[in-house]
Amino acid sequence: MAFMFEKLEVYQKAVDFADRIASITEGFPRGYGFLVDQLNRAGLSIATNLAEWNGRFTKPDRRNFFTIARGSAQECVPLLEIACRRGLMQATQAVNLKEQLEVIAKMISGLINGLDKRKV
Image (tube, rainbow, N blue to C red; front, side):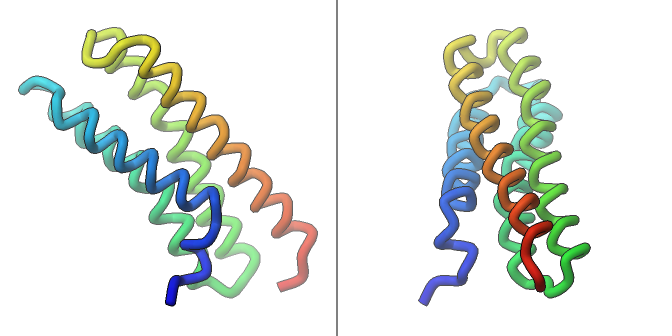
């Protein structure tokens, strides 16, 4: 049986994003460990905070984890930009990843807005 959050499309997209980032950063050359680490942590943080939300019962706690997840999505943007500028990924690849982040961030904003309208 799956956890409730595993059925959320935004969670699935976040896991897909984190997996793609892990795959891409495996090919980064030595000397860019700082970027590999930060990008992987930020990408993974989106999905993990969406999962952790599920175990919380108060609106402020839930909102906090959604907000952290959305912030982590936005944190990935400058990291992708640096990777692109350093020639570690192609511009088209970075643009595609940023588009995925934009979709994920909008979906998380929808969860936050829905939380505001709902009684817990």
